[in-house]
Length: 192
Image (cartoon, rainbow, N blue to C red; front, top):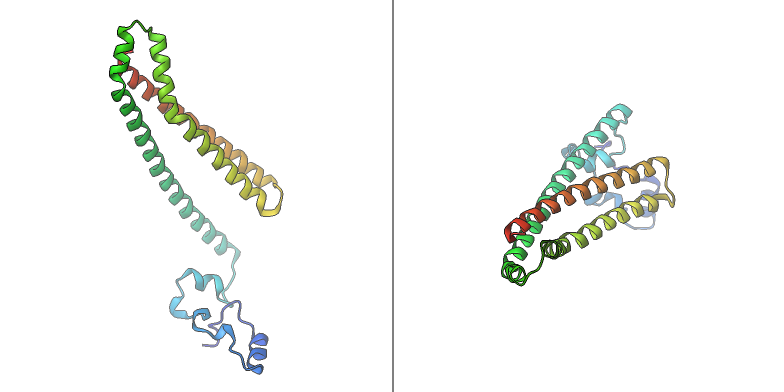
């Protein structure tokens, strides 16, 4: 049909290409738009005669962004659950493998403070570097994406960076609370 035209279609370029004996790229099948695909995102994005209503565009943008946000939150929760399971398993494994060593140290006269500091040092190694690397790389990536957009930070981007810092602080506090509970569990297992 005459209105099944992509937004990049240019009649002048087509006429010049045909005059030179070349095939216009807009006539190739992969660049054509068809009403059969009217429910696809490529049709909505690239149809030349698509009506533009600001209210509908904003609602569509909000709906799309909310889907992306829910998907991101879902994936983030799965990743954090995996991190907690792996860290917990690793800490309990360290405690079980070193149970005899702590019993020997206790038998040789090591104090509770020394044993607690040894267990704390071992458990902290499981949490410290992953948290530091993960949070600093996340912040650096977000900051450089915002800065790289236009070579500066607008007020909205600064608000986004502040929000990123607050989220990182909240996540770090949650991980710290988890670390403290795992440390208590390990100390209980070791009899410290």
